[in-house]
Length: 232
Length: 267
Ligand SMILES: Nc1ncnc2c1ncn2[C@@H]1O[C@H](COP(=O)(O)OP(=O)(O)OP(=O)(O)O)[C@@H](O)[C@H]1O
Ligand SMILES: [Mg+2]
Image (cartoon, rainbow over all chains, first blue to last red; front, side, top):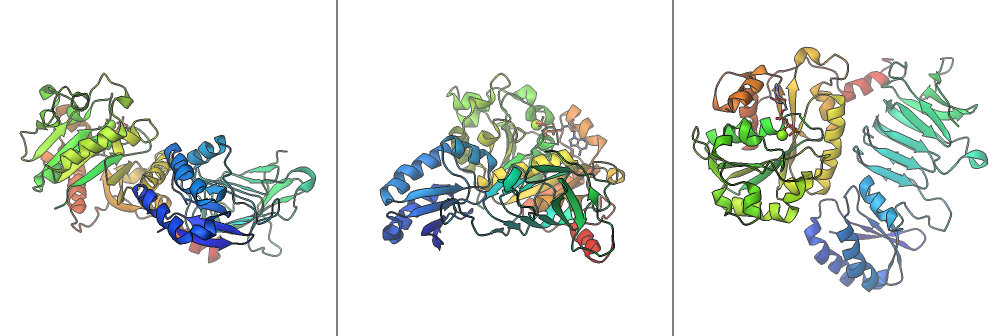
């Protein structure tokens, strides 16, 4: 069943469960309009599809069957499927979480799932993933990123930073670091499988213009993983 | 029982989809089910060869779709076992000769007559994968224990999930116990940890597979070969039987064990 949830800043989140058959979209969105009609009229809504891939046909059907007739305006189309994100972006549609107030930061995005190859999450704010980030998956966050599972994919923390505006405190935390690269702000750290902390819990940050990997939590007196590489 | 339509697919090519389709189809038929194996790899006909039925092709799936014949005229009955049929595809057509909608209606017609419809498909990164899998409810994902094959399988599982296939089960093929520790070969537990879907079978790397392909006789129609036992076990598990897994590998530490090490000062 599709759920409507209030968010800060008068945004309404419309969560479409991943296990809802797409054949039921018509009737389910119809029900949402019946029950949530007054909330939707004039509201800014976030359509959250989770990891579901969305097609051209779904987008056009939703616009003409749901968005326009309900009087809502879509603040963002959220899907973790990278191909769908491209499709939406090419139509000029926003694919990352909207800030409660224009330009401001969002709250943390917490995902209780793993990201598969070909899935991508973009978020203005911090991101916490309780599952794995597999090889071929990507997470871009303007803030910090924490991965509680195994990290094999590509993370870019502080992805809106760069130059003067870069926040020196931005970090990536991983409980099992097995990624060959990690990006923070404008810096790229290339990592090796033979590194001492490979497979361990680490925190990555930017120190002296380079990505630095250290054990996490910090252990006093012990040498950290060390600076690997830096690219501006 | 309700008919089950299962697509056999993979991320990377050449990992054993066609081999698995032929062997599981034959094994399901031996268990007394009425089975049809459909070659959904349009343009790259080879299920008929592996099943040894290529000399009996009159009409193909594409003929039925183009209206040159009825669907049941494309069915080739396997004479070696009761209740086993196959539908060949055309060699000379492009991947788009069969659309998703056409595949859906082919499958719904086959549901009327069969217990199991198994669809061999092109590798998931190729066009034609979506069409081949459109009519299926369930999926079997094949991978070898190589890093690149597993990453591509991960991608395809994401696609299958968003296509609402359920259940999606995993088959790890071409396992060579001695090789696991070497270089880019993963252990099955590592593969499962990455892909996070249910395992329905582990198939050893077995030279008999190549021999049987050359002879055009699915291994599961004979006895003895290790791979035949593995495919028969998979067929039995598909029908809901609880069959213990063959011991094909040296147990290796999984992710959780490693995490524990990381926390237990194991560094
Ligand atoms: N368990 C196995 N042991 C040994 N050889 C195998 C095994 N499984 C498959 N093979 C061999 O691997 C090759 C590829 O198998 P197959 O044609 O079934 O793969 P496929 O996934 O259908 O390929 P494609 O993507 O090209 O359709 C064949 O030569 C086959 O005999
Ligand atoms: Mg094949």
